[in-house]
Structures are given as C-alpha cells and as structure tokens.
Image (cartoon, rainbow, N blue to C red; front, side, top):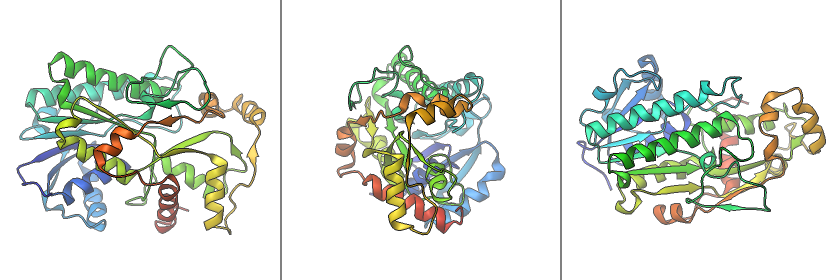
Length: 342
C-alpha cells in the first residue's frame, strides 16, 4: 500500500547493493527517501541506477554522512519518520588491524541511533547479519540458529567482520533499551545476500559467483555459502519498519547453505562453456594454502561447517516463502553477465 510523501525515510548506505534494493522498494511503496552517501558526487549515479530499475525518483533526495564523523546527522534526521540503517563496512579482505572494520561499524551505529532517538523517529530498522548470530559456537552437526542466538566472541575465533556486526547490533539494542525504546528497533539478520545487481558494481557477495564464473577459482574449497535473495531482504526491511509486531524483534534470513562445489555445479549447468571448477579442494590443501593467505586463514573455521538459520519469523513477517537459494544465485550470475562484469 502506498504511503503519503510526508513519510520520510532516512536510508543510510543507499549506494550499496542492499541499500539500492531497499531504496527501490521504498520508492515503489510511495515513501520519500533521503539517502545518505559519503560524498554527494555519488548521488547522480544512484539516481541513474534507480531510474533504470524503474523507480520514480521524484521523492528521492540525498544527504552527505560518514559513519566516522559527527557532522550532518541531526540535519539528515530532520522530519524523518523512519530510519533504515543499512550502511556498514563489509570487506572480503580482512584488515590487519581489526579495529579498522569494527570501529566504524560500531561508531556509525551509535551515531545513527543517537540521532534517531534525538529526532524521535518512529522506528529504526538496522541491517545486522547472520554474522551476529551463528559464529563462535562449537561445531555440533548441522546446527539451526534462531533469533535468540548470539555469536560468541569468546568462543571459536571469528574474523573482524563477524565481530563488527555482532558488536554493532549489540550496541544498537543497548542504546534503544537504555532509552526505554527497545520495541522501536528491529534488526534484519540475513546470510550471504545474492540476487540481481542493479548496476555494474558487483559489491561483495556477488564476487564469489564472479570468481566461479571467470575461472579464477581452480577448485572449490569445502566452505558453505548460506544464501538469501536481496529482494527478500529489502522486503523484510520495509515490513519490519511498519509492522507493529516487528518492534523489538530480530529477523534471521536464509534459504539454505550450499557448498562452493554445489554452486559451481549449478552454474556449470547453465553456463557449460565457462571454466567453472569441477573438483572440490581437499581440506588439507586449503589449510596449507592458508599458511600463506590471511583471508583464507580467517575463514578456516568454516571448513565443512554448514549452518542453518530459523527464518520462520521472517517468513511470517513477509507472508511468503523465501526465494530459493538456487534462484538467487542464478539471478546474481545472470546480472553479472548482463552488466558485463564477467
């Protein structure tokens, strides 16, 4: 149902993969969207991308915000009814100093929540992650993690990204509870986000599919990828913003985990002429390679450990089943080819 233009939503991270899809969903629903970018020079590119996706951008405006700076937050929140905070650093290559990732993620969340509370926005929707739920636990078969679970930072080693998402979400809940407004926050906790790209920027998750398609991965490591479609994630952000029952809730999102070799087989079926790996890499080879590659070393704990999420609350929120993982991955592959990224 369309909303009046007075319903203004501040959307941080609008130039990102998920942020673009959230903006598209908001605009299509009739909201006025105030998108934040680190540099206003990026605004024209976002306008062009959303226009090409079929959005009416007459209700779109931009503000300049930086997760690491205090300037601009109060002005950006002026007249805002809802905050969608999707902005957060996400890197495939982990920094040597963990705080380069953790610091901006937590500080950015603090700045966004502080400004939202000051402006008395009606609801805050925070993009968190499966990373804040399912890591640091002992390996026990094929576990099912739910909204009540939290990543254990004192458990099995976790990388900087996982720690950043966990600390940022915990800080958001702490701040909202301290203000007596816990029920005015909802967090979306997706797994790896795949699906159609809106432009030629592959983002981060899509890079995994790109590497399989372009032949740069000779064999598939036995590491699982848990998949959710970006269109479902965007829809969950909108539903969590307005559903009275969504306040104070976390919403895990994932269809199912697939191993790299499963994804490779799927892609090879549809793109038989591409040099997509046919073999799975033995774990001992991955461990040997990890001695010389920090990024692989940071993810060794996930070898052979396929985690599942209980998406029941999100399915109820959306009123429909999630897009199947295979469909999300194929949408990623097709759009990588469409935009000539591979």
